[in-house]
Image 1: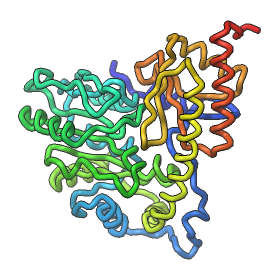
Image 2 (image 1 turned 60 degrees about the vertical axis):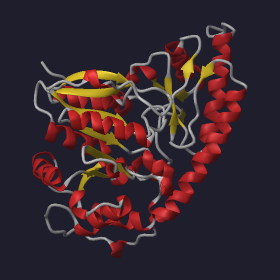
Image 3 (image 1 turned 180 degrees about the vertical axis):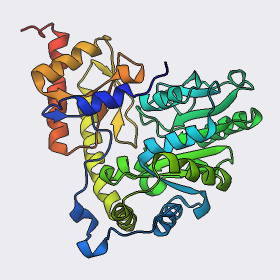
Length: 359
């Protein structure tokens, strides 16, 4: 019987969050006042069509692509599912980076794919080799910036992967939800090759998770196919939500200033914390809203228990990313929460280091 759920999302939605919750992987949520929107700016009576034209145009302009290449979606996870559902048949081989965001694996399993893995290293490359491709390979899936490390793939590596896929008559899906954290310097991999399909959203980088403003960038033929597929799983959306998304795009420059300030302050604080922390190994990227530390002692499971039970602090277990010696640490929350959470993390690490967890 095939898997029909995501273990990570089930855990995230059913857990009782700690007082200092560092599990979030995006920027602290905006308020409605940040959008400078009034009740007269929205209504509930929209026309049902394949895309709300002002939103399609806003996404296209933001991504610098033709409108016919855009498929709007309810967040990046729905966008990823649409791409995989459009391209994968049961038994097809899908190459997925390791480690990766668990819902990507769950979606591929649900669609009946045969999953093979390739290494995603902490730098700007991958372990993807030509020999990994077969006649049954239909898709390569990766995230850029990487989830969970937020490391960035260099464009030459993305072009190399696209060429490998082209030679095998396969496609490449690049989840770019964290690429938005580069703000005005972000450049979608969609521009590099026809074999590349990209997904993204405003969720992580701008604190707009509640809007579920996601999208797919694909060639027009595939985009039309996904619109028809979307009829089966998400045939219509709340019109007021579409209007709010358009307003958000108009305010994106201001929202980026707010978001960058939050993350930059926390990133600097984290680097200072790590200088005095011998227990963790992590490359802190210049962009993104999370990091993926490794416990040098390999005792991450006990650390997470101690953090939650004694210090009222939560991080995401690395086991959800197939890396039990690691944990994912969000850096986009309010600074006072982040700073206190890191302080408590330091206390828990000290307890483990000196064998005081039972004291």
